[in-house]
Image (cartoon, rainbow, N blue to C red):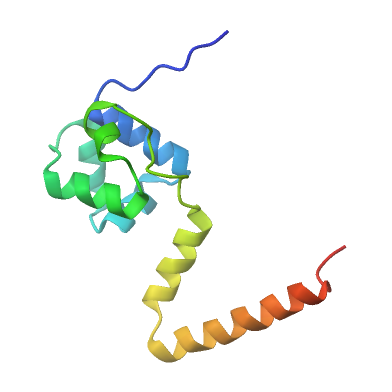
Length: 121
């Protein structure tokens, strides 16, 4: 039986969180509003964590702060967020209001199609 080792450092826990979410450093950094190089420095220990950064990670990725700080409790407050949903939300946020409205109309139409069963094989 193989035992999974609990990450002992905050850097290791951060890497584990990112791996669980299946995000690259670049994708994770973008959602934290920092550069990829700044994020990499957090993972390598060249940059220290502050309370603002821990709070941002917790809010943005639904991470349990106690887990991130000292490996207490579960990694996530609830189920980890769906990376596809995060991507969709990021795209939606980057669109202007007119295109956001257009996307919503299209999403409603796709839902109607799905409900008719046309998409099923």
